[in-house]
Length: 150
Image (tube, rainbow, N blue to C red; front, top):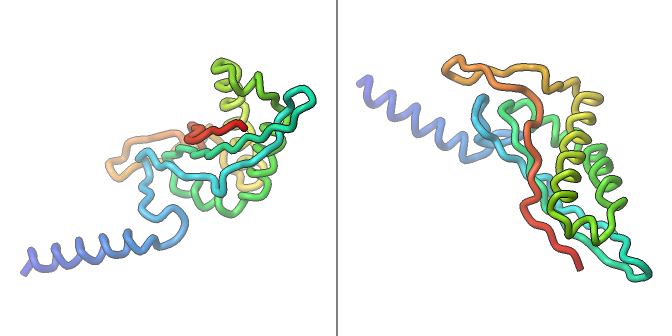
């Protein structure tokens, strides 16, 4: 009987996770949770007298499931901060790997600043996983998962 109950609970919890019960569906405190900032960012780039465009798909990583809800709630100021940063770049800057990595870090700092200002989420905080291990709160990483310059 105990096995039946355990199996029923497992099936129910799997179905609930698959249904995506809210922000972050399937996110787990203490795990690497990746969240895409959608839709992709599209900006104009400077290239002398030519008009160029860049499209960037971005994902962030957090250990804290509360951050995912905050990313959804405060998407407007987050997108604004990233768009302002990206639209201030030139084609030559975006073709330079070192500079692109610096811009990636600047975008991470911009997201962290918005979350601190609007949601009170700081990277100085901690979150515990199911085993009681402590992990940093906030957004830890930002990734360009797709980058196209035309």
